[in-house]
Figure 1 (cartoon, each protein chain N blue to C red):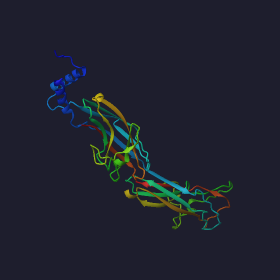
Figure 2 (figure 1 turned 90 degrees about the vertical axis):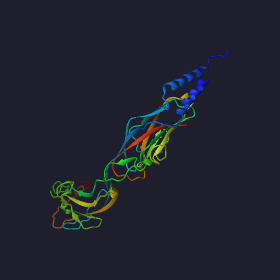
Figure 3 (figure 1 turned 120 degrees about the vertical axis):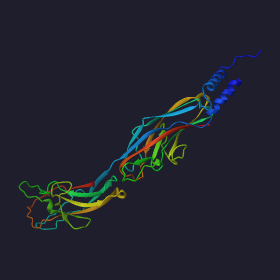
Figure 4 (figure 1 turned 180 degrees about the vertical axis):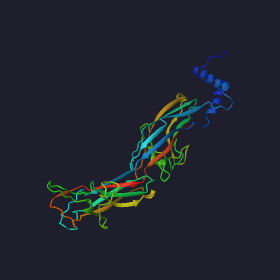
Length: 179
Length: 176
């Protein structure tokens, strides 16, 4: 019995010190994707046209809200407005009418600035049917953000013969981050 | 006349002790504790500003020990090497990391808790004690398996889109 106790005590002395296991590890990987969204409010604008008039303002201005969360490698952000065809941004609805309103006759004023026609070739839409609405630099400090811009539309009919009709079309808005 | 018959438990202890004395060299450690993890990796699909970004898998941690003493305590710890960058950005232009306080763990379905403790291992404020149990006569040797469900809390934390990587470390400790 004494032998057992003595031997166990000797064993216990080696076991009573602090004991650490080796390290087990798990690799963690987390991905936060980029996001870039644009919302429009309202989503319809009407125009009461006057023949030959340069000023045919839309019934309301459009508020565009651009929200982004971009990678730190992005350096630029731009917003574009465009139509799917330059020749008929707003198309006639009367089948006997063959005349449309080209995108170059539709103008936009961004945040109260000077009006400019949708006559640029931009990243989206038909050739010569677009307009860059804004562009801004992106830095790591501005990699996430939100901005709202106001678009006031106008249809310029000065010097353009347009038969009486109802003309309809879709203005498209899209943002792009680069590179 | 003295009896030479011993109690069976005494005979067992004597045998073990004698074996230990004969077999082990001086200073050798008879006790042991090991930890193993399955799987070896966890992925997170993050949502901006969301408090709930669970890992795609739970970790199963098996702790095995032998020849401990009654009264000792087994503790299991999880920790990171850095409190400020438990998961670090991978894009050089990005300077934002995920701190360990944003990584939480639920042990065996319990309440989630962040890796924000100072524990026996790892960086200050980057750890969490996961389990603790006392050793009894019935558990001098044994093993246990615990489940760890990880989550990354991004509520109120602005994180730049990127891939973030890090290493969760697990270690057990027996204290007297």
